[in-house]
Image (cartoon, rainbow, N blue to C red; front, top):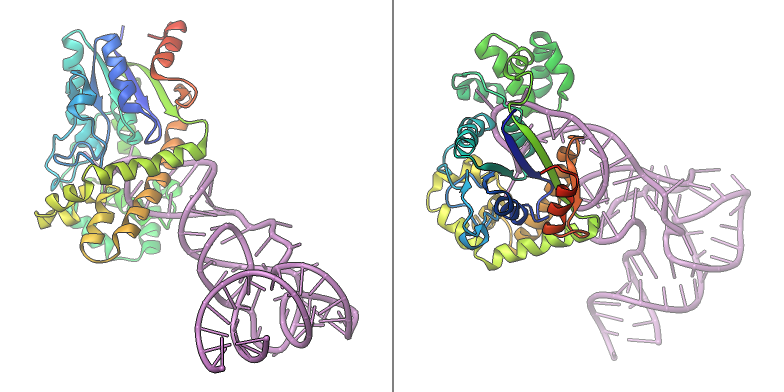
Length: 305
RNA sequence: GCCUCUGUAGCUCAGCUGGUAGAGCAGGGGACUGAAAAUCCCCGUGUCGGUGGUUCGACUCCGCCCGGAGGCA
């Protein structure tokens, strides 16, 4: 019998955090955050990281565990989170993986083990100087399979695939197969949250941004930027952070920056819906039709918990 | 009251000398294996303010009406 894991995914602003805590309380579990931005230390308001009060005494993992200057990746996430899952299981408790970063969640839950890889920074920098179309043609020659699944305009992904072949001598396609385990090591129960009313979700995204501003997002960003090296860090690709950094640079007025954050949040929610929607084994619940307790009860009724 | 400019997709606007309209943004759909809150792909029929006219044919020309902006009184 494989160890069980409960996962909570779905678009932002649908109440994943609260449901995670409720599940943990009900099932003697601990929450493992699955969020590419919450991992960074000091990025609290802008990532809507749960406060001590919201955690309600439930242990939370993978929040604020990396310095924001460090460029974190899926591989790093899995390397850190997998042992945490093992530890929670070892203590006889249930891990509840909660978050909106679909890629991280899928990789962690499928038990993917990333192969060792040397630093590709230099190769990557060189490739970025070159013409995207040319790079894609080069990729087509070296790893036709990867090229066929990556649009030539998607320079970032074309380069990633290229740097893999160039630095490892193995195609990304081949590595991907080697990295993927035949079967997930966990018995996963995934539930995704959404709002049936799209307009309502967009409104909630807007409210959430206003709320973050009220809670001091600007101050948080200012504080982080006292370290100028963070300006270009991966952490500053986070929604809210990059826009306010632009405002602090004088590139745009504050109200415009806030507008941009709202728009970015809504687009992000849409991408998340697409990502999580791919997993046909997930159970979807609309938060505007059911509260947390009702969802858990429903799950119980289906003997899923 | 008179004069000038203006009224085109949810928003900002293109549409040359007449042949029934197109961009950006927003929005929708999708992809996604080491930056993923990132990166990228696909999707634009709207009484062209209204109404009369000129014309084979008007968003494009003319008249009037309605709504904006500015100027002169």
